Length: 391
Image 1 (cartoon, one colour):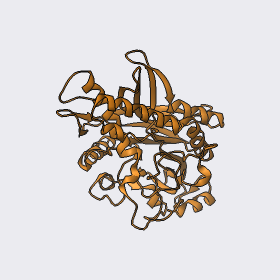
Image 2 (image 1 turned 60 degrees about the vertical axis):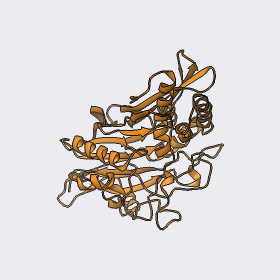
Image 3 (image 1 turned 120 degrees about the vertical axis):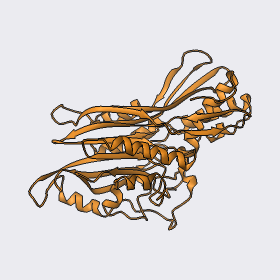
Image 4 (image 1 turned 180 degrees about the horizontal axis):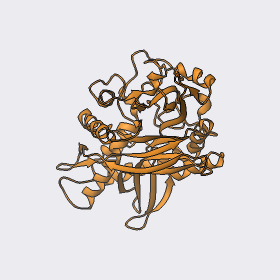
């Protein structure tokens, strides 16, 4: 985070608040992009998914070599509130009021309850490795004093998964940005946004082995204006990767959350940086995340990654443009199903890996949380079955 101009306490508070807003305005409410042309409820499973389930967890290729099955997933778990009101604050007093309202809205969407719903979805499918985005950490405390963690989304989700007998462990993470601001006359809060990779845990003999955990920040950053004259700021984002070995096969798994609020050129530049960083992998690459880019975005992030050689698990498993929707739910998480477009993807470099199944999760009424009935997130997740090795 870097203020370009203006110093002092007020400027710092406005900058930090607005940095948080950059994520919330663009990613916390992605449905603002509008619906896909055909509208209506979307396809939930790619057609190849049921065939893959019938085939079982491994099959012989034509030359007799065994293809190793591995489950992967991506899920933007939602930071918990619509942060755009912060960006429109024009004074310190207004900022404090709006920050307090945002914090209250985050509490109202109750990640403790939503974590249980998310854990139900993941535990039922038990993918070996999952890329998570908007894994927020919220802290609160006295103004100018030490803050205490009130909501650690990662810890809450891991605890819920362990309680279901499907434990996971975090193996790589990157902090995208953090901001501290007043939320009342006497208290302040800090928000930290993270991307995290988690893998199945358990006995050493059966759990995936990991190595070479890596995290990096993008050189490309969104530079955002402010309503405060003479003030602008930058928003950092990044990516994480780890090498995963499952049943004798190794692949590099990466996750990211590309820019949503800045210009498309920033997002495209981040996609190019990521493709270049992963191009040196000695193993097949699986790339997951919230790319804020639809399959029709031929000149943007999706098209850049496709040109770099990445295949889309949804379409590879037979899914079409009328389904696989992952974004667009209302920020309150209490409206009807408003998913309308697909920006969350499981991509892979097809040399040595292929997708045989893909499923959207968190998009059905039965997936809502209890007792309140929240959608698990303002995004749906994607779970894919890949085959490593063979042809």
